[in-house]
Image 1 (cartoon, rainbow, N blue to C red):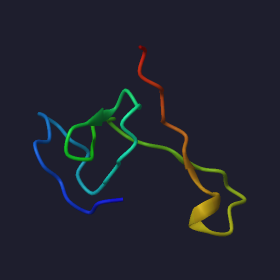
Image 2: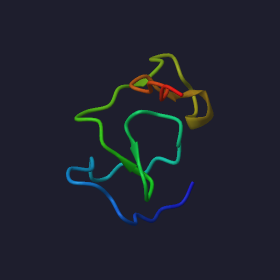
Image 3: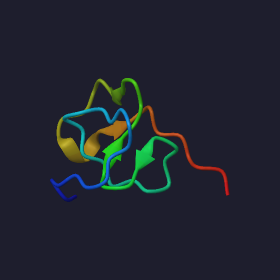
Length: 60
């Protein structure tokens, strides 16, 4: 994942870098436009076991 932001929209969630381009909250430049995010599951032992529970796929 790139740690760089380019061309973020009006109110990006600062501090979150996201490259999931098929999420409704993704904005160009790796920005997350969700007001807040939820990350889980609570039993994760490493970052590879976590997911963004706020993810919603874009409609085609």
